[in-house]
Structure formats: C-alpha cells, structure tokens
Image (cartoon, rainbow, N blue to C red; front, side, top):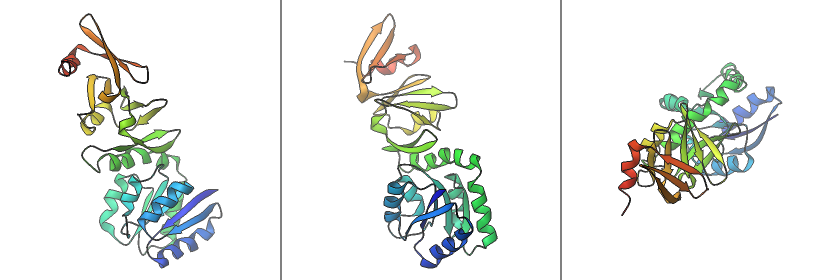
Length: 242
C-alpha cells in the first residue's frame, strides 16, 4: 500500500481525486489539506509515498512546498494553470494534471507512479529547485537510501567528486548529490566553501588544522578525515594564511 496526501485549495478538486482513487485500493488517502503551509506540516509528519499537489494556493505555492520538505515523495501536480508545466517537470514531477482532466488522464498519471525510473529521477530536478531558490542556499536536497532529505549546507564538512555526482561528507554520514563537484562549487557560498583539489571542496569553518609537507598541504577536518590540497589550488589556501 502507498500513503497519499491530497493538497488542493478547492474542495471540488480534492473530492475528484478522492473519487478517482476509489479504483486504487492500494492507494490510501491519509490526509487532505487546502493550503501550502499545512501541506508542508502534513507531508513532513506523515511522509506519504504520493502527493497530489496544487500549485496556486494560500500560504505557499506547490513549488515552495517542495523546498520545505524533509523527504520528497512522488509528486503529481493538479492545477488549472498550464503555465507551470515546464517548471513542474523541471522538478521531476511524476505527472502534471491540467484541470479539468478526465478519469482516463488520471489513470495515466497513476500508472506513471509505478514506474521506478520516475522515482529515481525525482532527485536531480527537485534538487535543482531547492538549490536555485536563492543565490547561496542554506539547504540542499540530497540522496540517502533512495530518499531525498534536506541537508543544511553548514553541516557539510567536505565534498568529494564521484563521477558525474558528488559525495557530501557530514559529521557522521555521507550523502549523494545529483550535482557534480563543479556545479556545487558554483552554487555554494564561496566565503564558506573552497575548492582545494579538482576532486575536493572543503568547508572553511570545518577545518581543524593544516599540515604542510614538502610543497603540498594536507587539511585535517573536524570529522577527523584528511583532504589533500593539490598544487594547482594551493595558492587559494595560502591566501588565507597570515
């Protein structure tokens, strides 16, 4: 069974979704809300598998709701506005139901939720929405055990390139980012994060000590891990030394 939450500021919209869901006994509606603020509270508390999400609502828009979630479920947008379709798919929504929609169209959206690929792809575009909402985000979305979690950027100790992706090292956990290390360097606050190697970025506030060996440097981080500084980036470290 999958837990479902319906978010729509119009009662008729919520009732229609609930009616169409009668054909899917495996989808259990656990909550209905009519505004963005309550949507964030209910989704974070109940952690549903699927959310039907309106876009234009009191309090927060559907897109703003996503940026406040601890974990990102499958999202089916349900709205009367077609202007947001591109943006919806840029956050990897499973589908975009444009009101008024037929039962046949609704069934097609439900079918998409069963495709594992849709869920796996949710991360990169939802993360894109989170990381681009402000110039230097205080939170980003990361992957952990096939779920998306919000991570305070201040808790990132260092970042390691991992192919086209990146590993984010915190005090006691390692998270995966759908962004590569260069993209993260461009989006994270340069006053806090510094590239010290083609494969490494460090949080300056998380540095415990720096050890010089020959012409190189080895950074000791507060989580007791070591990060090597390459010669090509050593000048950036020297600029911080007095």
